Length: 167
Image (cartoon, rainbow, N blue to C red; front, side, top):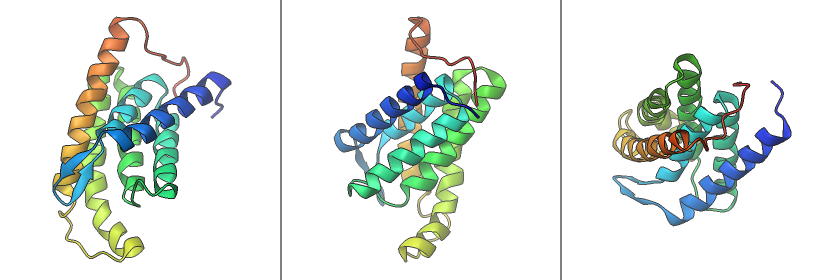
């Protein structure tokens, strides 16, 4: 997979938006806080750049948030699984709503189920399999719908930076 300069610049911009957005936009969602900007960025990046760059953006966002003390280790599975599924579904269907659905299922369901053993192993927290499900669902659904709305608006205005090569 070869990323050109434009792809890397867009990845950097999306990462900056996700990191800054997590500082300014969040709300309580059960046992955790919801950070919908990350999920919105995942959808937009999945549609405009593809699954590889979308996962890279989610990884960098999680890493920066953890290093700056504004995120937890749970940002890794949540962001990356949702971005991967969003990008994969969009690449295979060409429909933005499937990217949004992929973000909801990937983060809201798959990542939330993986978060319990992940939290137990890496964070020393014991939680049942469904413990993170409500918070992950609220966060991913709200963000994925925002991302879908932005993507549709950008597409209709002809301003969505869609790369010709989807990785």
